[in-house]
Length: 115
Image (cartoon, one colour):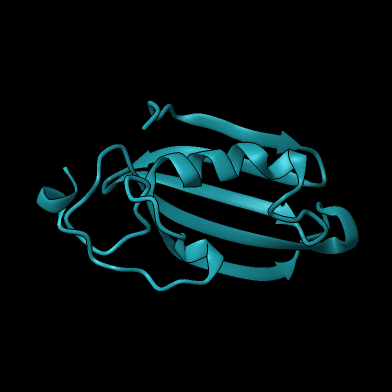
């Protein structure tokens, strides 16, 4: 897993804004993207890289009116991100299995069995 650093992950005015933040529970990835920005969009690639390289858990995702974004609508999402594999259910970056973002269910991982 790559090192986590606080700050912007991706930014393009009216299209995408994503940042890694430290809070009382650890790391969080906060993303706001126009409804026209897809998961495979080059502007969104840095966000996908963080999600693929670290253990994560999606906390929320909502589509809302946002006049600052292209077409006036945005998807706001927030993930918990771990620098190391946690002892709780999550989308695990250390296993070579499909991710929860690809439609599989979140599973609890026994870290001792993985390492």
